[in-house]
Image (cartoon, rainbow, N blue to C red; front, side, top):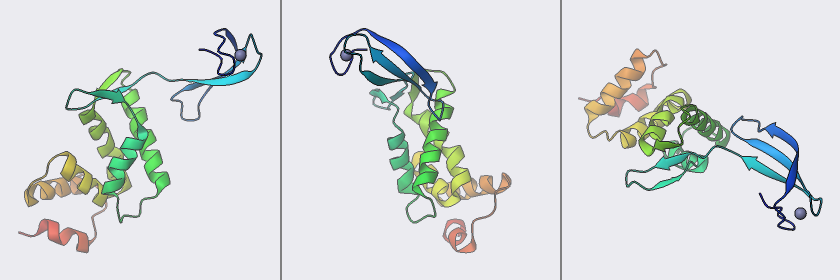
Length: 163
Ligand SMILES: [Zn+2]
């Protein structure tokens, strides 16, 4: 790691600590040449492999923007989304794998989103799992009910459960 001030490649670690969410290690370094201090962040690399086969680094912002669309008009705050993205990152990193399929990121989103907002969950699941009929919604709702979640309110159920 080169010093960002003088480009010298030799530095000494003066402090090392885990970031608040535990996903990275932050190191304070002292350049042995110019003696200025700088910080480096160490994370394990985690790539997301898309259906096209293209791999790109895991990015919480992409989780937030994907879930955010499903949450439009719902009582979900930016903080809720940030926490959800953190939970998703922790769960996909917990596997210890350096690469994960985009599909598995979607799966990791479903659990926390279901706890956060059931309507947003149904929207996200309908796109992500390719719901194409009322029956798909009915079975997803039945599953939510059987898992002991509080029911959706009547206005939200009616169009989804119509025969
Ligand atoms: Zn330096």
